[in-house]
Length: 341
Image (cartoon, rainbow, N blue to C red; front, side, top):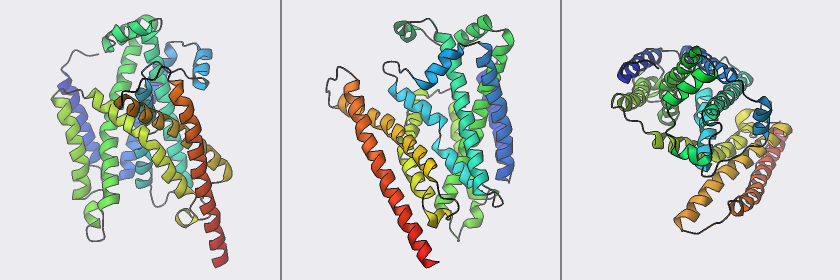
């Protein structure tokens, strides 16, 4: 939106992200990030609302989604970038010893819900760009930010362009901090030992090298003006495909009294909700894997429902079986703990 070489913005983001990552307190970084994300969310939501969407259609689309042909992997990627697995790692790794598990859960819930609202707002803005176009027109049109700028100026006003532009800047800036920080926290949990624990502290050499190494890779792509969009989509799709595995491990952990303590294990309603989430993520992930196998084997399928319906039934049985065995293990562990007491 500004007639300046992108290298200046890349350098600016790099400098500001470096300053943020130099903070020795993870809590201070988290609070700063929370402020940036709040501004980003406000910018996207304000832009989306200013387009005056048909809210009855928004509500209908939220309950009865429609999937354009060939968009399966993109949808998995969208879910992967909204419910990001490393949010869990970041949330559990950044938790203050004084913070309770309930407070951590509340913080993660707010983060994921806000992420979902932001994703909905961005999809809504994109929908305004392609409204009225046929599927063929969408495939042929070169949909870029210049076209989006024109649509925003027509439907709203000049200022919404800058509000949306700020939101995009804040999204990139927050990711430039979050990804290095989450990587460093994850690396610490994997490689920290009693012999080198001090070097993995947030203000120590190993932690900082990991964080700045990840930031450096991002800056390299930025300065070289390389836009690895396919790689980004594949990475986010992998996030989506990993969600079933993450969900299974999460269900196991939150139902294990030995790990969580009896007062923090999941209740019946929470497990029902988790099993539904597991089922949905299994459907999305398995459907894409089956399609990839069918494509590789050059098998012709006339109707996608011929794949989807069996996948829905198979994953329902798998999700139910996983929940049954985990819940049965939980009951056995509870009985053993009660006998010990």
